[in-house]
Length: 316
Image (cartoon, rainbow, N blue to C red; front, top):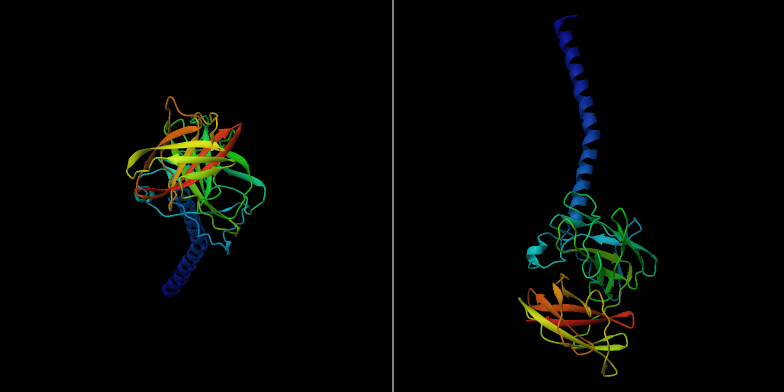
């Protein structure tokens, strides 16, 4: 075979090799890119900060049903801790610990299981917790307009997954908080995710006065919430004008959750152990990082039943 012919065959062979290589790349690269994109999405969701739900409207349905048999979860923006003034409960991750995707029923009235897990800095599921306020983990769920507050205590399985029977009473966007102390960290964390529950939403607004109902009881609040400082807030529980006897609940005479309206950041609140309290009275020290409106949820136990009073107050 002469030289030109040999060169022609060699060039053809190279073309086949490079063509085959290009074909393989065309098949492999999209799959690899898809995998990387999926990992980035999962990482962004796992570390989503300041999750926020779509605005709830009184008449329209709330979109967000997914195909996984759970309420739709939304991710949010970054740098939330700085924007929130370093308050807790504004992010899904903190100090290497992450609240996983929250699985829950999709629709109002649908009985199911709400479940999640906490992963640590090493990526493994956390299975060791310290007890705080008599529980390993406190689950707080509230709709983004402040309605539907629930304080529950799920069960932890041997694999570290937390579960609790769950039924939604109303549609809308919800914030789910996990308040916990990982044993390895030894400090408290409040991690959060957002969920959307399908259905029409009826707008609700908490009481703006200093008195609120808690079942058949009346709760009166005293004290002012100061921005940028610690404040003492007092609560007196009565029925028909007479003070009632409060039973111990989670290691105190009551339990208070405070959320900043808007971003629903979770505030530091501590019970005040004061000698000589009047019957039916309980006090808390609260720290409001900024001026504005805050939602307060007081849980008290009377005759073995927990009752919740909701307040909306302004910090100045």
